[in-house]
Image 1 (cartoon, rainbow, N blue to C red):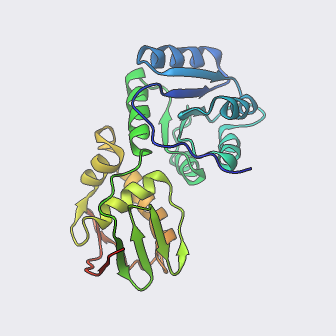
Image 2: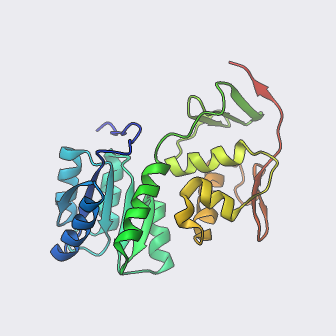
Image 3: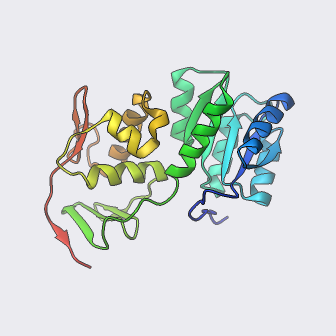
Length: 246
């Protein structure tokens, strides 16, 4: 099945699919999201979530992990076979291993229960902002070196002759690093620009997504040439100067 990719998400008429096997939790979330002007559709399990994703094409999915028959991890894996819709995991389990597993599978965020309605709404808005296309720096192709070329206007990354597929958050992180090549970007700066001010204390997101980027664009991710670490401070992209006009 061809992957269905939503185009730029506007600030109005957004639809959120809420998936949880606890009816009172679904109603609680739905009530608070509807108060914020969001349209809500509901599902009680993973199978129903997949059906409604096909039917309603939501802008975002709030997905509980601990569900019978098909848990949130399996549901996300099946969603990712056909959809690139952003997903926020919701679970009473707050262990780091579960958070990392969810992000590795393609989740965009993770919120542990209990949570406040304000926090959930804030995270939803932040994820929707992140999944909108980043503004183009120019129509030219940036030639970092013989093995890496980036065209932000066409949203293409070519590493060692192959086009690399990036998630929206990975793309926005790369955009910030490349357009500030040679400059140190602190964890706080990257969190604010890529994730939003709501994430100012979530340093692990930066470290994790830098790891993802290195695995995709670096020839040897353990000895990176492009995304360089400044221990305890942040990251900088290697300085470059060659730029090819279209």
